[in-house]
Length: 120
Image (cartoon, rainbow, N blue to C red; front, side):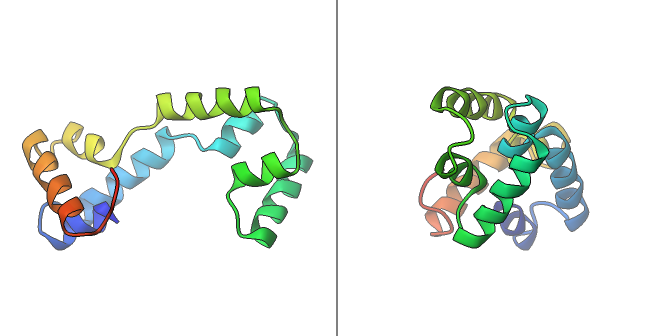
């Protein structure tokens, strides 16, 4: 949503947004990817959790927890690992030179004050 907001307000172009989102998706590993790569779950368990997630309309993490596939210690470790590696869209746009740090800060404020989000 924030990326669309930036494009609609002329802060960045569609191409800059697309490029930043592509980089973000390559760099940010999802909870499920972390579980798989860390060999905390098997591919069969992944498929089972994915199906359960879709059936119950819940997150993948919630599915794994409800299906008791891994312990709370693993969940906590994976959440921490994902958070440590996560790069926010705004940070990428600043690093790529599409926005200045000041433009990012003012856009985030405007985005939040405009009622687009309730919590950053």
